[in-house]
Length: 190
Image 1 (cartoon, rainbow, N blue to C red):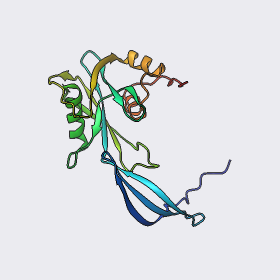
Image 2 (cartoon, rainbow, N blue to C red):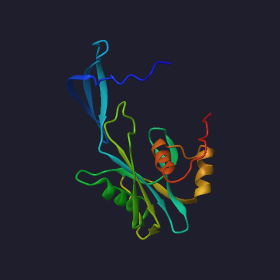
Image 3 (cartoon, helix red, strand yellow):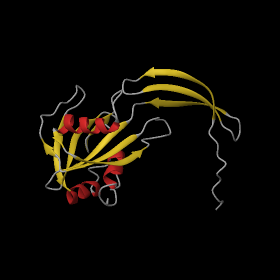
Image 4 (cartoon, rainbow, N blue to C red):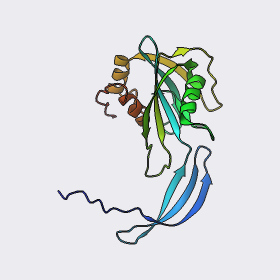
């Protein structure tokens, strides 16, 4: 096996063209030059504001989960609360807002778990992961027009069973959960 080569360089940007506005994303096409062979490639980039997701734990040590329909897969998905950082909003404020809006829960003991790149092949944003311990339900939910959410709570062992059985498999949710609990092997899909 050859040793890693650190001489890999960014691809030169020749030009950018706006693409269609896709509501949640804006699209653009970047024309890039491969430094290895000078091949010119038209690349799709989806521009998005950053996202947040929240691992929220109750005083009873239950993780707050949300169950909702996801258009991309055409299926109901079990996840943790999360959403888009609004323009001019910090990701910390967005995490608090999204948790309150989607679940009615609030808490005081927040910890930043870091960020991950949702898909750097086509997306330009980050997903910021947050943990809050000791959450209590203090509000009614405030769903937007595109949300229909059922709130669940599960002990850590139950969450692990959901992952093992393939009931909880959203990659960004698994990243956040993996920074708080030890994850089991993820179930293979048929």
